[in-house]
Length: 335
Image (cartoon, rainbow, N blue to C red; front, side, top):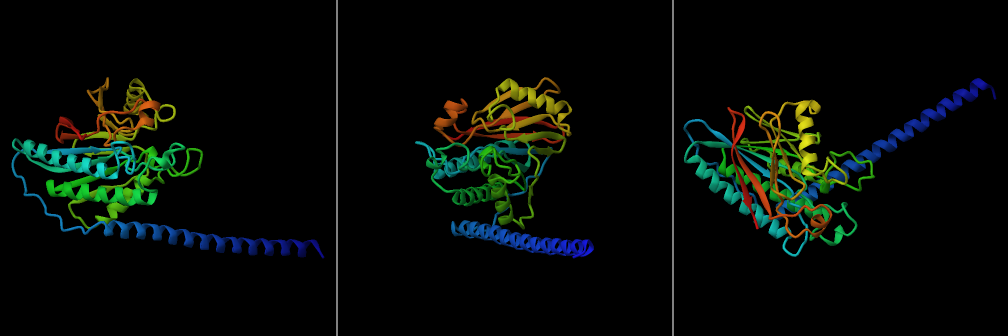
């Protein structure tokens, strides 16, 4: 057998092997796509099974002078977390309570000026997940699939409620560490996250709502743009060791981002993750870092390991889009 014949035979075998691998990859991709579609369809069917979605009644148009924009910072729902005072039903009750209070305060604001629009900033850790600490599986009242369904449906209900209060609603979604798929050691893209999956399902359920804009980005820092008001939305686990950073370190990190590390000029920052309501001034331009609490209560792990436990709360701001600043802020206590 000549060398030329052996080389030709080797090339033929290589081409056959490559063709076989390409067929296998295509078949695997088809199977993966089918599995993803099956999971999505199952979640969609389960959500629909939770009850019909009636037509959204738009609010009465508010005429008049200079309008402000409502900003709902909703974060750290920890959907399906189970503690002595918290579970999936309590989560829903507290979020409904927030919507009720936000509507009341918006009505008070409208006695002076119109509030036609709302931006809902979803800060992450909307699900509890199952991959953060060894005994977590014993501290939830729902599996990952059920968390996916329940949280997605609650997101749909919140956005629909906002659409009955405001003429236009924009949703911006950031994801958190509890939505992580697998452990930190596994090489899974950060943007593949259960929080983001919940956002995608809820967004698709609401597809066709002409008064709704729902943004999606694979970046791990989200941008809030309301007229001349510019802020960033991040979860908070990106900073420090094991997801914990002191207040000073948080402020220093945000100042670095504001000084050019992040390629977008902004005034304020919004963060969750620590389950506390706090606020710190930034040294330049009068900006502030707003930390928003959680709907959760009695998290022994967070209070012992991270000193992160407080009265359940979420945040409501009103923004002057012309002056580009927060005009009033409200912490909505939910316990």
